[in-house]
Length: 110
Length: 121
Image (cartoon, rainbow over all chains, first blue to last red; front, side, top):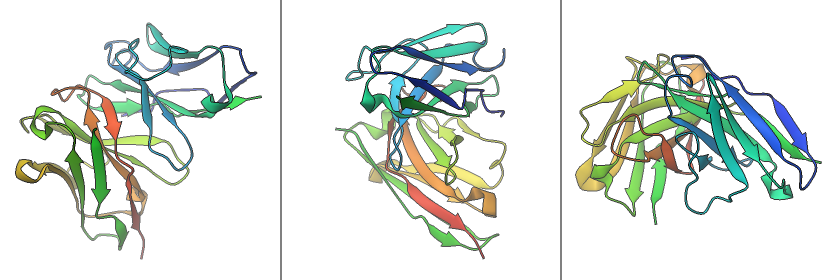
């Protein structure tokens, strides 16, 4: 399964909004609403931030939101904070009943 | 609360086998699909395998198909990953993850802390 494409890095100043894209194909992102986003700090396990494209698990800040258009999903972080500096990965279910992860995006708070 | 604790990692020679375990607690283990996901040092996440709640469906990444087997022991609330014919590119931290629901199409909600597997001669 091919990796989904994410920008290597995205940066923003505190309080700003940033958006991370996740581009797949019609066999994964484009065909299913099983897209999720994960936040990972160095040396730690990933944490689920968004699932099924738009839903936030309990306890995740409402500054995080997800969307999808065609073969591209997006994660938006509003009101950027220093604690948001981490790596972010998208993931999608695929038509082969497997899963693909994105290439990962490093978010830097300036 | 949900807790997943992996074990069984270590250094192993190429071509040898290793079995990873994931002890689950804080939820009804038999009601959820379970995944294995790995991360090579300094690299991104890489999905390995999934098993549905009733073990009726098991799916694998192409890179491990035929070499790795996912299984579980309900009586011990433990998930396993049997890894055979190990290669250098299997070197990674291996995470077990509980799915959002019973289905094998359900994604990764809770994660363990991982166990490191190093394949080297």
